[in-house]
Length: 163
Image (cartoon, rainbow, N blue to C red; front, top):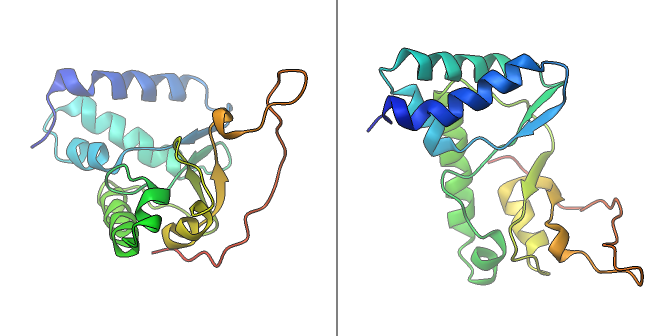
């Protein structure tokens, strides 16, 4: 069922803000369910927002869209539980919804945005999701003696494949 005009107002406001600052690099994790709903909306302003997102996706130098699962998933928990097929299914379904909405993401390394459940099984899950990069919450980083969170760049080596 398409969202109401009132429900799409926050999306429209976000898209308007992004349009007002075209040179500012932004990474967008667009929810595939929302994209799918908006693509079915009869509301012209919702469709205009979707068209603007499609145009932004065509300029990946300043607007990077992340491949997302159809519904939010806990990659670590699904991997530990052995539900690896669910990861692949959700990524495929998310990609199909993104394509249906007109977002054709460029091929290449994918980035996964991890939730709070970051553990040793995350690396195996990244491979299933087709990701070779991960963003983790700062709460998952170790604290230094100065009370600051340690940050560093590191590469996650996996046999990433895009579902």
